[in-house]
Length: 308
Image 1 (cartoon, rainbow, N blue to C red):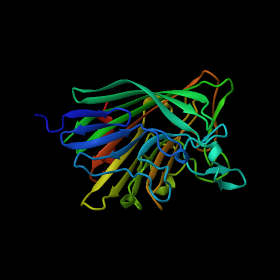
Image 2: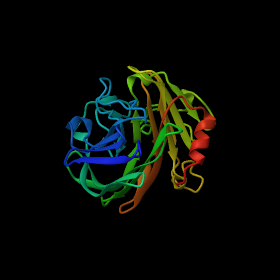
Image 3: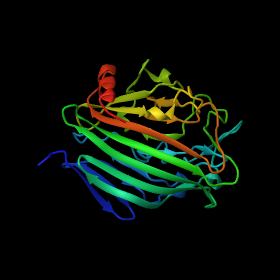
Image 4: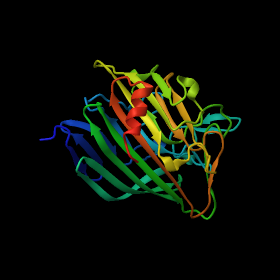
């Protein structure tokens, strides 16, 4: 028997759990939670092959940080991120009437076979009043379980279609005036023990990678409660055009290791991304979850060994 065989368990209306052998690699929770936290599905916990947890859930500094999740901190005046809303010239304000949601609408596929698991989901992005502003087709895949490397890979794909009769404006606190706080889009919150961890990019190292462009970014941290380190690598799919070279809206990395670990390949760091009525914003990302403290050569070699 394959000790890393992938199996899925679905508790309908609540969550899906994926195991590799006896280790629960991920739990995808899609039940709605507190309105102030902008209810939306999320992945937590995410684990390495050895069982080390690499995500945090509802930390006391930001209750709306939940593992790995798709977010929209500023969306045409609404907040689908959760918590307080940043306003130009005013800072963060408690504005619950601006907090929206991303609601689960249904699954088109939940399956695991031949070393690959897939979850295909339909979601609705809604403002605070419940109006449907966008539809999302989401696919989450787990694959390339590599015992020799001590790593496995998750691919997240989202296609968001504007259902309003006016443009959707994707922004961030930075587009609203707060310097170097361009978080939005896919967002990862690491466990508390990962604070002060190592940030590594294709062409640089350290928290100064905040706001830069790069095809990938990695974060290494040391576990609390058990020995060892883990490395989480975030990578753009080739079609993302993360640098804007083909005329697409460029992406910039949001990354912090102080006071907590967080990474987001932000699609609206410095400038708003405007999506016309009926148009679709499509992005695909790869997340490699690995035991150990990987160096740049390890990351490059591993990424080059995987097909998109």
